[in-house]
Image 1 (cartoon, rainbow, N blue to C red):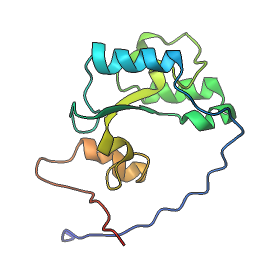
Image 2: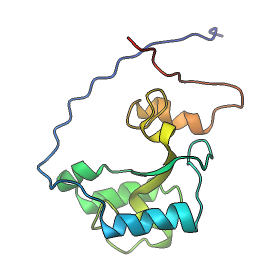
Image 3: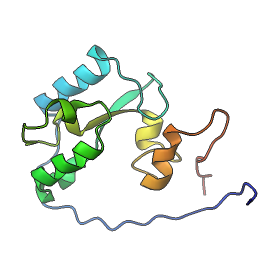
Image 4: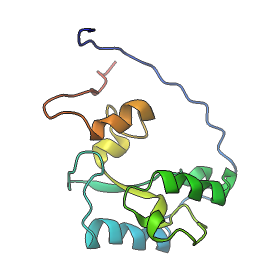
Length: 144
């Protein structure tokens, strides 16, 4: 058995964002965010917190012009955290703001430096949902 240890990784991404309009919150996103956070009162999908909740696009909004909607929907059949895709399997997905493409996260698990889906790799981000109580698998990077 290997002893517990820290391993520092540096992740560099070169993302080629396709041309897209300037983002503004659409009526569909506003409606779906309200449904998820206010009506359904869904907590952060990772930690269960109801503090500082935000709504994350599973398939990034700015990448949408480069994506094939049928393939997005296929992926959402596999990762369907709230069952919306299973409940509505025949309706095509036409917008990144579709409720099937949204996930409620607290501020830390959305954009936080040591825990946010926008800041760390998927293989490290996802297990945060299943970590044993009292154990931390990520830490906030120290200021340089």
